[in-house]
Image 1 (cartoon, helix red, strand yellow):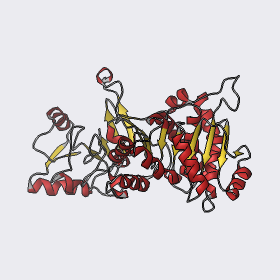
Image 2 (image 1 turned 180 degrees about the horizontal axis):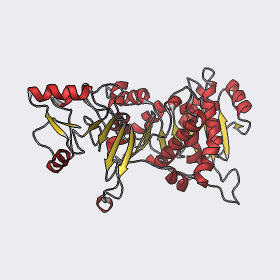
Image 3 (image 1 turned 180 degrees about the vertical axis):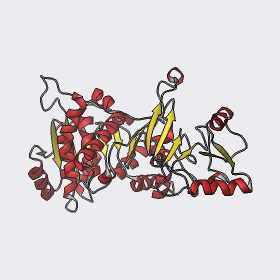
Image 4 (image 1 turned 90 degrees about the vertical axis):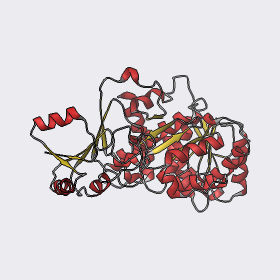
Length: 414
């Protein structure tokens, strides 16, 4: 058992215990020790990363950066508190960093373990309680809903309820090019328990929706919330409907083809409803384009490297809740706090997955759930449904939608 020292100081009680157990020390700051350190890495069966703790910031310095780059492929890595080389608070990464199989963190989860891209380097996270409960903030700036938390918030109908009290969701989605987006959004909402879906779209798409979701009602009517933009292209009737919905003061889930109109209106000060009533659902490329509309030169790569920063930026500039889709989904409020949900499988990165997610969120907002909670709840249920439908292999968006009722029942009754 070898300990590689990459700095001028180390935790003395830890060194004493290692010495008592017969371990040895390799000083990577010396020429001889550096060579021995690289040799030890190449022969290791297990690597424990404790280079930087939760107060570290900035990239790794020499010789730590070179040693991290030399970790052999296939050797299991356990990180202590967090993978060294990631920013503890933002999850941003600059330069070399550890990619762990397991991260054992103490006292509480550090923000970087929930924030991409660092979250992807943490592997499986294990929390060890060391008695810090009374010293932790009551409401953390970065939060994650659990299954228990979603179950406690889920809108369960009472016996006197009927389809209109369950929530009526207006859906303006789909186009002749993307009819499936409308179908999947409507299916996601219906499978999540909405009372009524009212669908507005081109005649051919309407036929697709009614055939696939016979519960849907075509045409305008009174609604409690809107789902706008999934698969929408340039259609005069839909564009007019999106503008009216955004002016209505009703809660809105705003996706894809409606994002630009929403951002333009809210950045210009037209905000008939507050941030709790607007849930924008861009992916990284769309979020970059929305910030571009506001005069900021931002690329998709910029968003992917600093997702917390950019999601919070768009939320603040538009006074809206922003759900940034990804393998870890962030739900940012303009006040600065956010949810981070990572409940699905990588197999879910497939066409139509986001349309189903928007449908689930729309059903929740039609039932009266505020945008931040609706986004996090939808992300968890969507992720768990994807896991169930995938069972470790490829999965379609339709299968995700079909798995939702079983997931909700499982959450509520376990």
